[in-house]
Length: 446
Image (tube, rainbow, N blue to C red; front, side):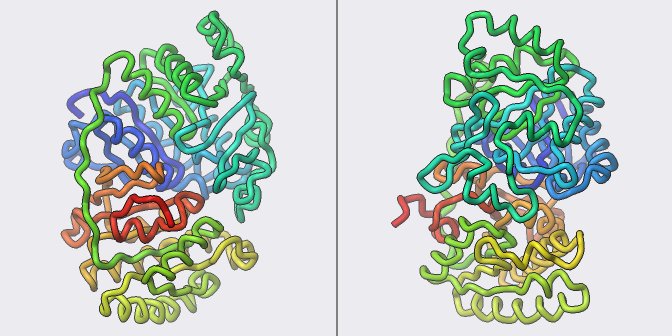
C-alpha cells in the first residue's frame, strides 16, 4: 500500500464484512474487502484504499479453528500498518463458547497487538442496535427488544442470545477482565481520565452507545487512545460509525462521494440458507411479486450422497424460470425450522453454503446474470468461496437497509469480474428487499 490505512478489519462472516465496508465507503473512505489474503499484485490494485478488510468465517467456527486461522489473518492485517485493526462482529453479538467465540477472538487480538484496554463497541444506532449500561438491545420490525428477548436472536438456531449483559456473555467465552464505560461516564467532564484509568485496570473495555452523542464520544476515545504502533478493537460496525464521526471532526476524511444509480435488471437469482423469519417474509413477498420460489432440501444438500441429485433438480427448475425471464429465489428454510437444528454433521451448514454458492455460480454463468443475492451470514461466507471472487468494493450503499450494500465483484474470472452482488444477513431488510434489488427501487414498502 502507498500509505498506511486508517483502519483494517476482519469480518467474522461475509455479511458482517460488507457491513463494515459499506459504513466506510459511504462516508468517503475508499475501502476494499478481500475474500482471501491477497498477493502483492492484488493488493497494489487497491493501493489507494484507506480501509482494507478481510472477510472470514469465524462466526461459525470453533475456538481451535480460530487459533489456527484467525491468528495469521490478524497478524497479516497488523502488518498493513493501520492505526486500528477491527475484529468485526455481528451487531447482535451472537456467539457461544464453542462456536464463533468472540471471547477467543478477543484473546487472540489481545495477544497479537499486546495492549490493555482493548475497546469493545457493539451499539450502532444506524442499525437500530443500542447498548446501555452494558446491555444490548436490537430492533425487530417496529420494536426494540433486549437481545435475550429478541424474537429472532433469542431463537438463533446455532448461537441463540440468552444473555443481554455483554460482559457476562463474554465471561462465558474468556477469562479476560472486561470493564465498562457506561453512558454516565461518557457524559462526565473527566471522561478522558476515567478511560485512561480503566485501560490500565482491564484487558478490555466495553463502551455504551445509545445515540449520536454517545457514539461521537466513543469515537473520540477510540482515536485518542489508539497505540502508536496500531491498536485492536472488537465490535460491530458501530466501531466504524463512531470513528467516522471523529475523523470528520478532525478533517481526516472528505465529504461522502456520489454513487450513481445502477438501474433495474430484468432477472436476478437469489439463494438463501437463512432461517430468519425476516428472510422468510422477503421470500414470500418476492414470490408474490414475480419471483419463482424454489425450495432446496437442506438435509439432502448436507448429505454428500444426495447433494448432487438435489442440486441438479433445483438447477433445472431455476434455469427454466430464468430462461423464461423470471427471477428466482432458492431457499432451504422459511423461518426458524426445527429440522435445520439437527443437521447430520458439524460441517453440514458449511456444506450447504458451499453448494448453494456452486448453484448460484452455475446459474450466473449459464444465464449471464448481472446481479445476484445471497441471504444468510454463514451461507454467504461459504457461498462466496464458490464464486471465484477475490475482492469486493461498494457499488451502492442501501440506506434503507444498512449493512447489505450492492457490491462490485473483482475476479480473475471474466464471467464474475464486475458482477453486482448483495450478501444479506438473515435479519436485515424489509419485506421487499429482494424485489428492491432486482428493480433498484428504494421507495417505501407497500
